[in-house]
Image 1 (cartoon, one colour):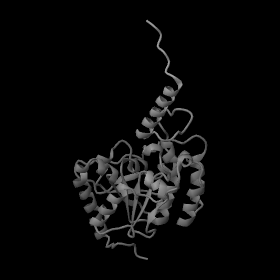
Image 2: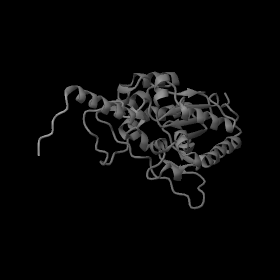
Image 3: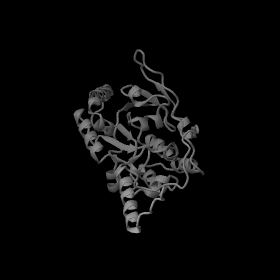
Length: 286
């Protein structure tokens, strides 16, 4: 058999460019890390997450008992510890936003364009926590402004809410490359800020959009399909009372699977009913 003839140099360059374009189309548009991550190693729960253990609230028949929060691994170095120290030292939302913007302990910041902290009314009775910024959010610097955000706006409007009556944030503040799911270490480095954010806002209802947010703050071993539509009491450091917490499908999931919108509508009605029970209008009372 005769040896294969190598391609001429111009053809090799064209082939390499075609491969790079294919990687970008598949979502691999960033180069992060120099070593692979072993995701089979069981992670450990950081101290901030251990304090946020939920208990099921008014369980329905055949409901599944809440588990401890999802295990979140400590990232290399002292990123979670540093985040806890910084978060504990802030007393206002402006100071918290500044601390997040200055934080260098999350690897996602190195590939992001903007820090995406929060949007909406800081005095709102409802706080919504999603997964992380996408491309539009990274470019603009506000959470939930892309297609998923537009759907979220319509969902809120359906129960009489809008961005002036809720506060919206994510479990990570920088876009994961290619819109991938944030890793446990990335979530762990941001979680102290998220918990401090909840403490400062003191919402009367907390909505967790999607499995990543629910897994980071609420439970381990149960997917969002089994958690959604049920109220949980979430203990948060710094608050003497647990926060009523409702997991729901993420709007981006509903865009991919519109047949689940009926369940999402049910969950919105559950939220609206709780707000009505508490006598809450569109804004938290001063």
